[in-house]
Amino acid sequence: DGGITQSPKYLFRKEGQNVTLSCEQNLNHDAMYWYRQDPGQGLRLIYYSQIVNDFQKGDIAEGYSVSREKKESFPLTVTSAQKNPTAFYLCASSPPGRERGEQFFGPGTRLTVL
Amino acid sequence: AQSVTQPDIHITVSEGASLELRCNYSYGATPYLFWYVQSPGQGLQLLLKYFSGDTLVQGIKGFEAEFKRSQSSFNLRKPSVHWSDAAEYFCAVSQTGANNLFFGTGTRLTVIP
Image 1 (cartoon, each protein chain N blue to C red):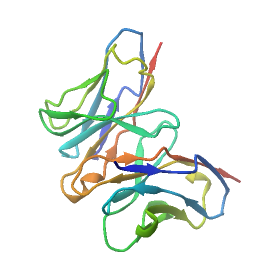
Image 2 (image 1 turned 180 degrees about the vertical axis):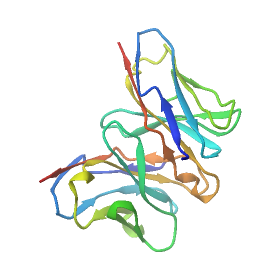
Image 3 (image 1 turned 135 degrees about the vertical axis):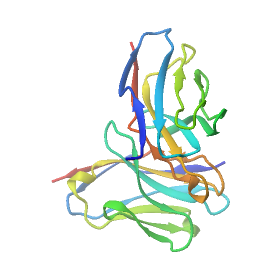
Image 4 (image 1 turned 30 degrees about the vertical axis):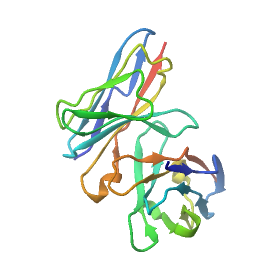
């Protein structure tokens, strides 16, 4: 079955450490996204990528970095520069064409800073 | 700038009662509109979408939504709520030809027996 996988489901990090969240899709979608979700704030866009080897900052990119070396993969690194990284992180992808506003979501990774 | 407002943070309904979740958007042209549902600790699942045409759209799980241009609204409805509908619901908007979705802050639905 096609879909988006995120790993791990739960992640714990010590302050000052970088950590990388995995996102893989087998939907053959060109565009991929990372969102951060905090209680009462909905989803906020961190980074997105429309094509391999290209990505753009979203609304809250500071303290995060991404890469897009393969169409299927869009890993997110939470760096030590991110002051409040504890949150639920969601990866999504979207098909080309008029439906590109429609996004398909992975199950999420919950990051906790200890 | 685009924005999406979901004025109800939390709604409680009895099982079997009807449901309406409100969504208002701010955008100059006709946007693409979406409703997503999220169970606790899970990703988002698309309930329904509006691109153009008939302003009443049907979705999965018995949900429907009506686009009202004059009110800039896209309210979600269900005639009879089931206990399994308890979740958080997000309205989202994107503009024609764009990739990005703008989300509302969500409405948490509680269903009581």
